Image (cartoon, rainbow, N blue to C red; front, side, top):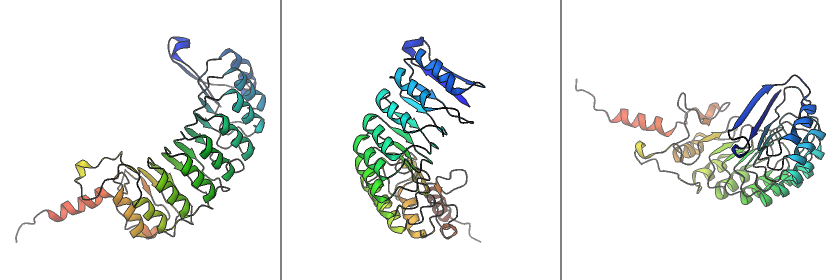
Length: 307
């Protein structure tokens, strides 16, 4: 298990970021230390062996009111009681990782978002019970500053929730919908129209996604797109979509995916720079990134010596 405590500079005169392997019971350790670190801002409680329980999280919430970053991933023993405690005691949270916490309910998570309205990064990967359309509606309503959301393998999520998210979180930059098998083109269209800062989108195994979704991205108003006809030196890899995972999206065709690739120069298919990920889509092997197209055109323009 990995335990990390980070204190603000104002408290310790030097930033303290100490990591150590703990062979004792993590739950008891948190119970004893949390009351002594009332100015704590970052707490990583990632576990290899599940030990953390609700009473430890409640103690954190009771004493660590300045907490901004909290990682409770793989804390399988935690219940809704932990989320209710955090909602009341840690309202300054900006980053929360509860991936793999399978016992949380969507009502408790929705309740937390109504209090923790400064959330910018939220990891719900594997929270199949908690991550639902109800939660996404709450996030869209209360967490307008959200920039990164991981919904990997949350199969209760549908277009209804994603559309609420898109409309309520216009600054969203990273969204992982991998394994969200219920979503369709409507989700991607909403994101393309409303989330103009979108940089990374994961659609792995979203097999209801079709060409319509790809063309919506290509024709979207996502900021800083640059046309293919501009010189390569004027293209910035920071512009527009940087990462798109459409692996196992077997309904897609080459023209639609090529349109997205042509629109966003940071999407690469070339060796060593794969940011357009198309595993399991053998029919998309003809899709090439902007730099590959440019190299091909340059080579074609080189004059050949006369024989």
